[in-house]
Length: 251
Image 1 (cartoon, rainbow, N blue to C red):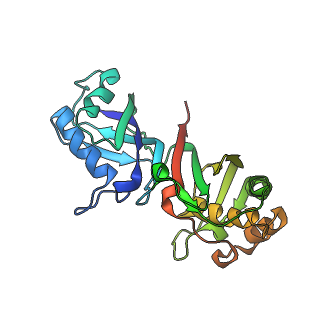
Image 2: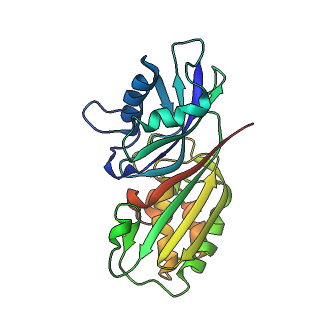
């Protein structure tokens, strides 16, 4: 049978989601814990391949059991995992799904959050959880970034926001929301789409920071989209500020 698990994890000490034989990964850690929980080897498939240092508030993964029925009530599965997982990853929910359900290919939308700490000094309590940006931005940086972000909403070719060297050929995606807000020293970008290219969110975050410095506006963002060239966009923001915050499926 197949279960859909919902997870949270702090990616600081993980080498990403995908299993690697000689590295600590979320998939590898979860697979080992599942073997202890259910007493059998389980196949675990994730909704995304998050990079090293990237976090998740809501990550979805399927767990395939070589059994006809689940030996543990779904409501008790998160607690069973909690006894066997390290402090930086948790299973928050479990539910049965159809055998043909795929956590990646049946996604309706994904939402990411990117956090930037704009401060001359770092905050030790946010270490590894934000991009610390020590340079000054304009007083209305978040508003300027939000205005530029609005140009990304809709169905566009996002080739300019894809990592160089990526082999993906279909670079058209539909962004349903992209907004930027400020909360004290934190600038928070939230973006939702039907899919994302490799490093797309981090490149968008790095590009929007140009707007916060007064070097880019909505018209400039539109030109970057039209260029369809990675060199037209800004720098790739570091992984530690990125969070997968929501994954939705058809009911």
